[in-house]
Image (tube, rainbow, N blue to C red):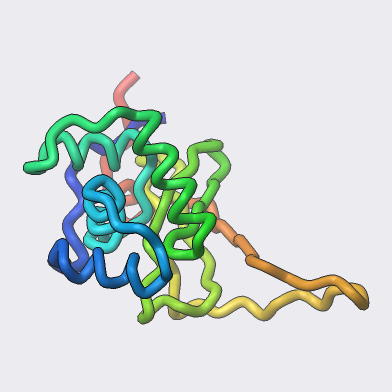
Length: 158
């Protein structure tokens, strides 16, 4: 499957101070790497894969980041509830910051052509009925299809 090389735009600019304050508010120790990783997720318009996030960090003033350290920080953000992990049928994990404006559970759309994943916050999905004594932590729904950009692209030449 082809991957889009287009850079995805930022959702909004977030200051280091704002990102650090959210980490502190969650009762967490603030480090430079934690701040830049969380800030990058907050600024992203869509969920990012580990390589996409690493590429953004390398292109920023942060410079190179060890991939293992980046992965550990992403897992840590998921574990403390400041980010969530989305998996589509391509088996690539993508990470997204939990934002107040997207606080409710929502599905995601995965383009099987370019690999882009977007949040669908306007599409609510009711929680399933669980057996007695079961409790839901998180629900994940990914809709696989073709995005508007790929649907308008000319068919590949053979």
